[in-house]
Length: 68
Image 1 (cartoon, one colour):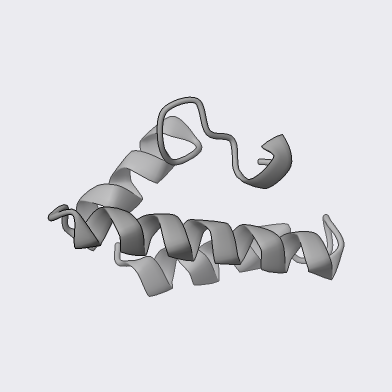
Image 2: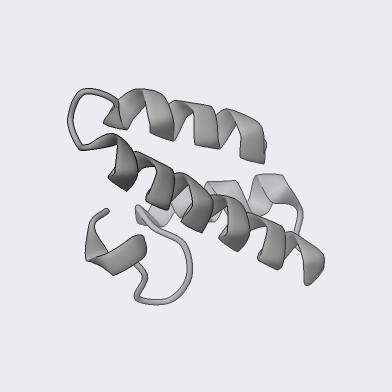
């Protein structure tokens, strides 16, 4: 799964469950995180797999303000 597919899935999962502003905040966070890690040499697919496997990206991260 690539970054766009991950972000679309995240949006679909959150719609109707949390306010739009929280969805946008999380989409920005994950988009930035995936881009930053890809710029360091990881493939988008590897970063997305890590996010899915660990229910969050990066050590100890649970999304913006711990919301996810």
